[in-house]
Length: 287
Image 1 (cartoon, helix red, strand yellow):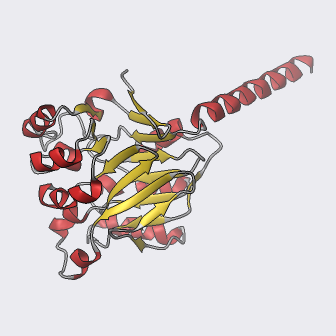
Image 2: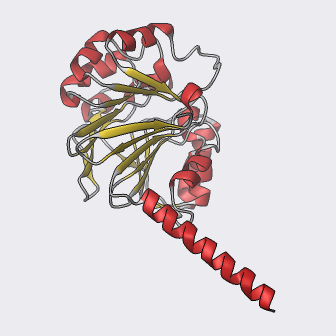
Image 3: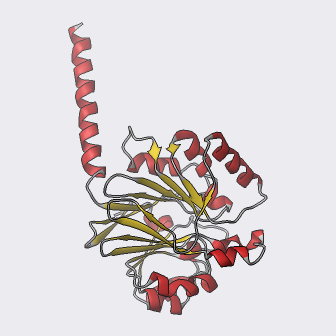
């Protein structure tokens, strides 16, 4: 009996220690932006200073769950907002297990769709969770109430309503958002290409951190884009030895010429940016 009591007290002590450790580590009143290591795809987790949980895309598999587990307290099973940039499989597949494991409060995306089986399965998962499909457009703002704001700068309402969007063109209508917290700015670009990102340089302005468009594709961005946004750090979400050759040597060379420090998930593992609104720090899983 005494041994059982000792073990029980020890378990409670360890559990309490874990609670306080995670609470102190993850609720530090800073903005956390994490590029999850999910292979050839995108999944970005954001925790705001007040503890709001946001997930941008879900990657091509269920590895996003590992990312959420390591960056959210073990007792937290609520995600305040999921933003799907566009409905390609390498961005949407992981959202299905996320919906099954977590209580997602809100979901937004661009006004695009696909006829693929994975997209239909995703819509069914949304329906099962009684989540409404809501669209965002340029000039929409999501204010999280603690200094963090997501400003949607693409797609424009007109660009999505003046024509029928072909499934092969959904990349160009990815949700592009500018995340701001005090002086810190991060631009999340989905899989948009050069013709799209060149259009939004004035709205983006000078930024600190760039989620490099389309996994570092050769057609993802231009010198004009980098000259106008002037990012200091470029984050590339990409799978090792992927069949697309991402990131391209051309894009890496362009980033280097513009003095952009590059971190990529296939080389650096999970990448985390922390900001107090005045300055920022970048860490990787292989630091």
